[in-house]
Length: 69
Image (cartoon, rainbow, N blue to C red; front, side):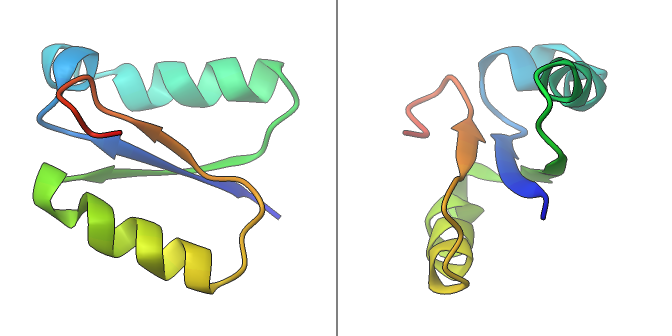
């Protein structure tokens, strides 16, 4: 089952690099992690995290660089 990965499209390296989703996917693939990457707006982060947690996911990766965490 893929691990959900939320990247805040307006934060840090995500905003600065159009290819960041592919780079994150490649790094996770290299680590043996099947990732489901989603680029989201910062205001959507809380809603998406809650929805993913309600599906009983064991692992969630979030990145942003602008206070996302």
